[in-house]
Image (cartoon, rainbow, N blue to C red; front, side):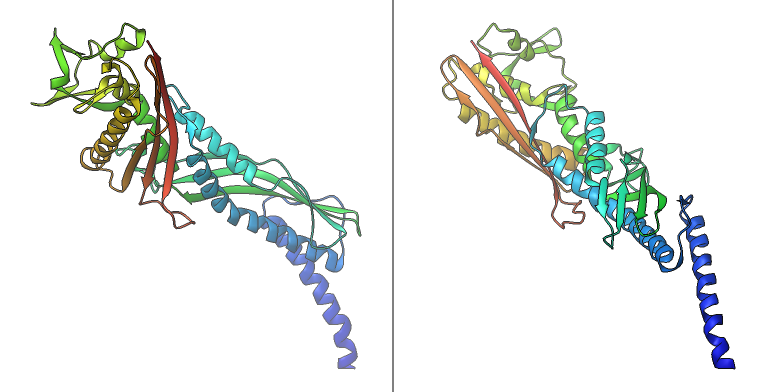
Length: 344
């Protein structure tokens, strides 16, 4: 009698446990809804698959965020002093993470099952707050960012005409110095400290002019009547917008700029010397003045072309952060180009 009685008891217990599992998972996932009553193993396996996929999505968003940041930094786009702005680069990262997450319909674990991922809405933030950075150190101390957002997800099973829906709520930290490197790149173009030897200048009314400029174009004004921010016995220092363009046109350190030439046939040699001097200077500046170790600057001017009356000078920047390696174990690198052209 006991053996015969055990079979229906065990079966009843399985159904009860299955119902409890469904109720618990419905509560845990914060708002699952069932458009039809599912039954038996189909119900339990469906709920388990939804929960498993939801957890996989939550776990994968960190990798998606780090990968998106790495690719955006390495895009090697043209940058200027007017853009892309910091806010535009943040928006690009949000969009790249969204595009890296699954959307649309997919096959489930069985032929009868279909999965549907809605469009995600992602926001990156807290890159200048603990644990990612510090408000006192600014964005150039940022080593991670928080990914927040939400996405809808549902599973259908044609065997029972049922649908289970579950919200996916993202909130995780991605280890990446994306915002640090973007901030450094924008600072170099928007408000960086330019260094020029006093021997290349003349002073008038507390300002200085670049003495060797040989042109009357409007761009020559970039080299005239600039007020120094600081100075020492040999150099003037100026916190100024468009520092790379001023360097190539007006000079940098003790190197005279391209506008000092009678013609521009030797533009590539001059630009290469200025690029090398500027890279060394920026690396020392960020390490010794700004207190940000681990940044390496490389600036290439190989694309510079000059003729007698015209030059096109391109600086290719590569800024490497040895302290941010993320999932790939390779240092993160920001690459961008900035272009200056001039005709007599």
